[in-house]
Image 1 (cartoon, rainbow, N blue to C red):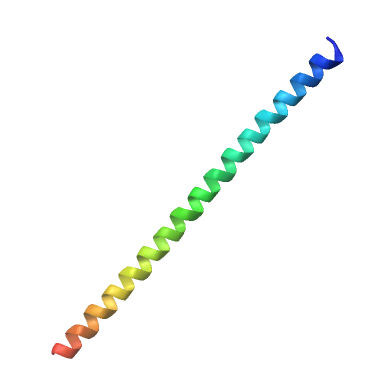
Image 2 (cartoon, rainbow, N blue to C red):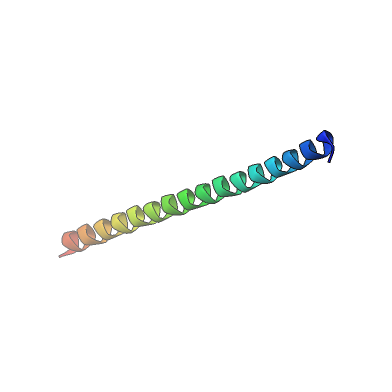
Length: 60
């Protein structure tokens, strides 16, 4: 094999590894966004509970 052919194989392998890394980073960002969404929902649920609780207290 010529040096150029070996270099091309190495470059293609490197590009493949970079694509895999980018995919892993995107997956990590997706997990982070999902966690942030769950936290936001939890906060909203707590706020809703507090509002309902105090509304009942004021009526009663």
